[in-house]
Image 1: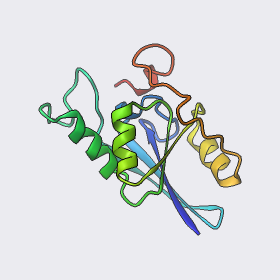
Image 2: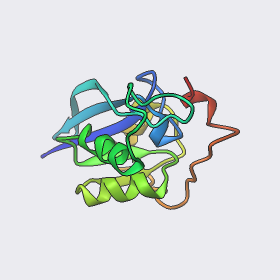
Image 3: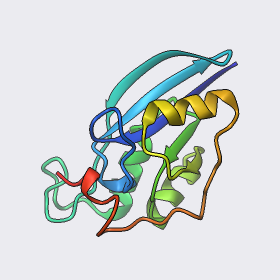
Length: 138
């Protein structure tokens, strides 16, 4: 059995605690409980005060849709904090969305692979300021 997981990140090693601000997904494929591949994939970022890849006139709904499209081929998205609009776009697109307060991508993937991952969906908030915010700001 193969599962493909997308994790929002800016550096390929740390989970971005603000889903919308992450510029990439680290996409990890797990087959028969072994990591078989991983790649860093562009993810349309929603960054206040900056243009969204040169398209400042894009609506929130379209931004959320592009974030969902960028995870094509994945089954699960594991995020830290995530807003309601992004959550709705992802679940409507058929993804299972899980949340965690962990930050190291390798540790998150290992806990999922080992069956010890704790899904904190609905318990991790998306803060636009304070702790966890700086690791997603460009």
